[in-house]
Length: 234
Image (tube, rainbow, N blue to C red):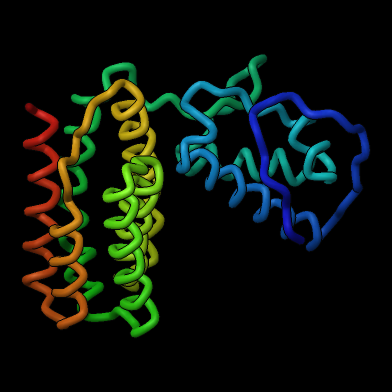
């Protein structure tokens, strides 16, 4: 079922639709996708509370799929479920620059490998989606829309890892990427510009994946991550 655009503001209305079984599982996926989109799009910020009853009322569902969605996002590193405080958008670290540098060190071990695998296993549809994301990110950067640009950065990396065809890598990488997105949001909210461009680097990665050149895809990914680390240190 389509869900309306959520907001961190208080809601009116009291109607709740009771759901069970498969329907509740489907609603859980919809609610999780909606919240994830709002967190990564920075409509919900680190530390914002997500109140189960209010969200359930706005969406016209019971609290069960909302709670399940919050648990799913807690496991993905986007939501923190705290005793006696409920759910908040995850606060990754109060010192975002050193935390981001640590994440990049980990990603340098995994992401080039993922890009190399993607060059071997990607489908035509996955390659087309990657190229669309690069084009959309460049437009967002040109239009001065950092939230949209950050969303495309996230989408590109997520798609590259998915194209690797390694399900264990996908599951292991997702929390790292989510935490990176939250830290990036904190940095840009504080006026920092940790990435000067990066889109030419993404394009090189995608071109290498399109050419089925594993070594070039891995090398371009390393250059991109080292570029980010250098910008952060300065």
